[in-house]
Amino acid sequence: MDHTVVHFEIPADDLRRAAAFYRELFGWGIQRWEPAGEEREGTEYWLVSTVPSDEQGRPTRAGVNGGMMPRQHPGHAPVTYFSVESVDDYAKKVVKLGGKVVVPKTPVPGMGQFAWVTDTEGNTFALWETTA
Image 1 (tube, one colour):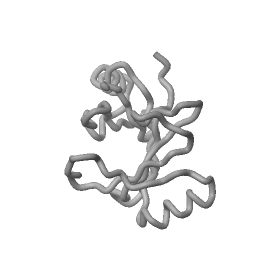
Image 2: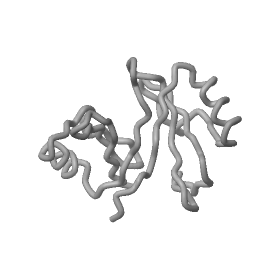
Image 3: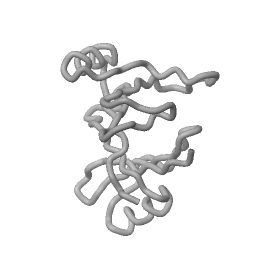
Image 4: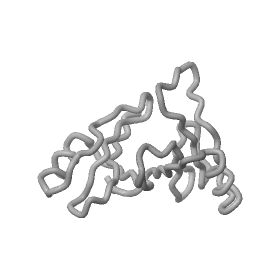
């Protein structure tokens, strides 16, 4: 497996303003995520399309799509998601190498699961495991 960037998230204080900015700047498709038949718990989430996607939301050509979410805390920076075979195994590896798990494994129904971790320099990134 390639451990490559598969997703990004941009935090924003005003999601509509941020969406307008990135639409105008790059021509990205940005829309509020409305899961079919599911009630959203808590966080509002917007999908960002930088390249065309298939029915499952996977890019159909080279490129990475992402999302926007409300800023969770002061200093909340964009987060890059890297694909791994197992979130559990790689989270343990992060800790063994001197990093930390800052958001434990979290399921995304019908898609996969992720964990946010930090490296030895305090940079936050995410591990992503596709389960669909």
